Image 1 (cartoon, one colour):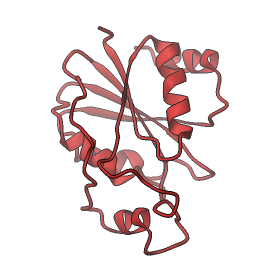
Image 2 (image 1 turned 45 degrees about the vertical axis):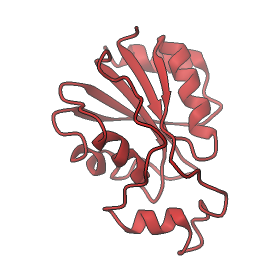
Image 3 (image 1 turned 90 degrees about the vertical axis):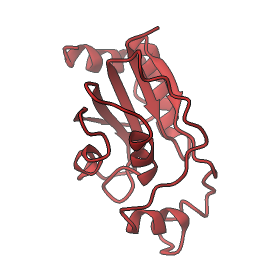
Length: 159
């Protein structure tokens, strides 16, 4: 088993594309964080204040239910945690994921995809959900990033 895990949430497939390339570049295991109720395109309409994603992001205590809790994190020292940026932070399902497991002593490196915004306060919004873990902001990627570029980024982390 790899000591590195790439765990990711991808609402539209973009983050999933990057996550799969990152797992290939690092030789990591791969785990998809899936919601119990899949997001539809209307759920993701950020211009509609009543859309599911808008309602969840307005309520910082929102914790969308996970489809499963089968991630085997016990054998992994380092976890790359990927997600799309929503409203300058991670979607609240990422908090749900972090709160479902014990990440004590683990290094979590964030990576994200975004249509234009930066990481914002994403790392700060996740730290309380994973007490005992070291969470560091990683990098934003586009789906066109190459496996070679991801390998260079990984190697540059010095892990």
